[in-house]
Image (cartoon, rainbow over all chains, first blue to last red; front, side):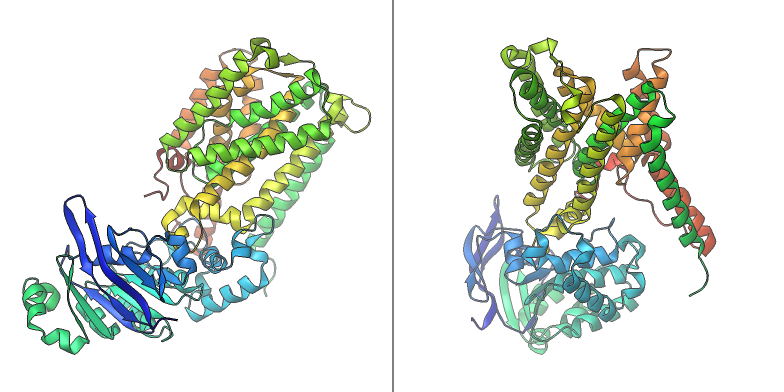
Length: 254
Length: 344
């Protein structure tokens, strides 16, 4: 087993003439929490999608826990232990909260996932886990509601529940607090903070407070390239970062 | 717990009503005319066809306009199999299931990368190709004349009368309808609905989305072919019209008018539209015009179909009792047509 949950080598993506990500070597040790920040168009989200599998690189490799997954589709990476949330809430709106969670738990179990003759709610081991998750995340009261009937903060939490239901080893969070009210954002950051430490977390975040609070280390990207990686305190004082990012976009720095 | 809540009472009432309805349908031969028994048989067969179709349409959000292909395929299997060749009835059913499933899988693969109206066009093309084949391969299908003389007695155990035939149809429709119900509640069935809501989320949960799309078409095709066998037996005839695009449009209307978001939607739709057709035929033979008008009125005044309307009333009633806001209603049937139902 590799000591790195995620390791990229010379990762490059070009969309037509635009080089979105240019020769990035990212190394995230297992169990670490890494934030990727940078100004708009820095290639954060593309980097994120490269790790999750939504985007394939033009060149370079992606390794997860030592395994080369460069050519693996999304669902195969999920089975290899990768979970993700989406920037825009992405839930099964017409299904109940319980069914959302059931599908997530069942997704990690190939035998259940492929069953087409037995009702989804008749798998005792799935039900037990679903009940645990709903209790643990304070969603038991709304289990029969549909996601659109929840508050936005609850929807974001449900996203994290779905992503981590299969006992994943790597969690990718795409701007987890985007669009959430200040109070709910606090709650959400606490929630993320309370996730088990074995879980490696990579998050792309616009809100600097959130990034600095959650992350052990921060990678700053500019123009598709990795500018610098280091602990929050170092990043805060780094001149290049201030020039490239904080200096140019003072709103976020505030 | 307190005494019986109004919800529990309503559920009980609904169950009793459904039971009474089921008994009435089974006992119909004791009080209905033979003409009415014929109409009920037609409704039952179309209900099964609609249930099969709705796996792809209502649940999967993929608007197929080619389901006549499976329906007609089933019809020609029993037609060619029992009239032109000498194939046993069990073999006919197995062949219909297998070939319907295979054709379904092929259509599923063909439409894998398409959404909305493109699914509609591709499925239509497949059905039209089959229609053309049935029309031209006269040696097998007798072309435009079709194959007459399909024995109703073939599917009836024991003595074949109008009544025993009706009960056989009811039994077969119930069995295959129950299988569809079972399938739709399974992990695979729920995943098919989830794929309609968000394919990217489903993939991120570890599901191979394409397999579930193909699976939906496969099961749908197999059951639709069985409905086609029953329809040909009911008419004692199969011809190119069983494969016509109007048949595909009609089954889509069963789902839309009844309520595509509901399991029972196509059953209600088939009952409503077949009854309407029988009634309208008393004073005009322009059934397609009436059908088109029905579609327009449905879209205008109850886009979620008859059951959608009932469900809205029920929600409003509950919300008034609880003093809540009315919850947003379920997806429009029209979402599947435009591909806006969570496909973004």
